[in-house]
Length: 146
Image 1 (cartoon, rainbow, N blue to C red):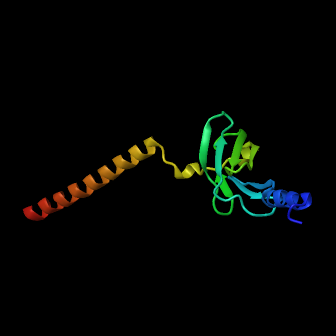
Image 2: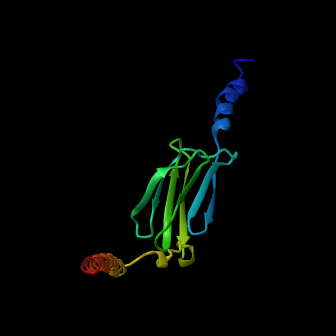
Image 3: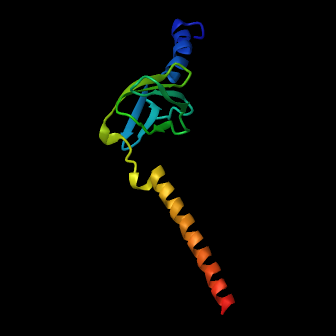
C-alpha cells in the first residue's frame, strides 16, 4: 500500500492543497481608506508588507498590515491610488483605488490661524499687558503724591 502510486500522489499533493488559497479584500472609503486583506479561508493576511502610491506615482506610505490584516491611509489628492500588498509567501494583491473629491478628508479651516491673525493677536496681548502695567504705575504715583 505504501508503495502504491495513489498513496505517493496523496502524500505529495495533500500538503500542497492544504496550504494553497487565494486572497480577498474589503475596501472602506469614508474620508480614509481602510483595507482588510484576508485569505479565501477567512484567515487575515496579518503582518503582510504593503506599499501605497499616490496618483502622481510617488510612494505615499509603506508598512505592514496589523494582526487583523487591516491597513489604512488618508489620501490627500484625487486620482488613482495603487495599493500593493504581499505576504512574502507568494500571495498578494495589486489594487487601484479611485479617490474623488468627496473622499478627501474635510479640514476645518476655522481652526487654522493664519500668520497675520497670530501677529495681530500677539500685538494685542503686548499692548494689553503694557496698558495694565502703565495703569498700575500711574495709580501708584497718584497715590504717592496725595
